[in-house]
Image (tube, rainbow, N blue to C red; front, side, top):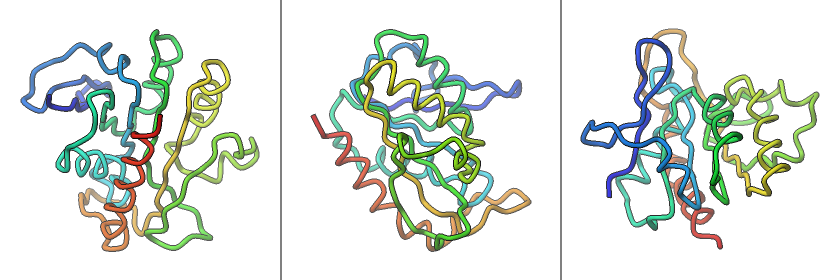
Length: 187
């Protein structure tokens, strides 16, 4: 079964499509036990990490049918708002994104515990302006959903269009994909 992909439209919204380009029913994605959201702008260098991880997992294959992979670009906030309102919800969501944190080295990879991010620290992370962290906390608290955030430190977010990842971020992609796979297979 081909995985779904969010495709940006000119109006700033996105629509889900199969890899062949046919529209699919958005609600199908919310019948998966595990959802992986690859966040980021593929035209802004290392910000495209999340979609690159989703693409790598699609290429590797082998994930169970109960796992949905979705390149959501920079639309995490809209997807999470929809998820708050939809039923049924997945048991686990995994958000993969790039961050820019001055104290980290390019290509450094870690997991952020959504419960450990204090309101004062929310602005320290660039996870697409991170009001999403509050939405992730709400999802976890109101639904009991297992929420995981995997991030990689950026090396470069260019001012101009550039779809290339830095060598440091490219090198860590397989490790991030392996960790996502591990999380997808947890009961």
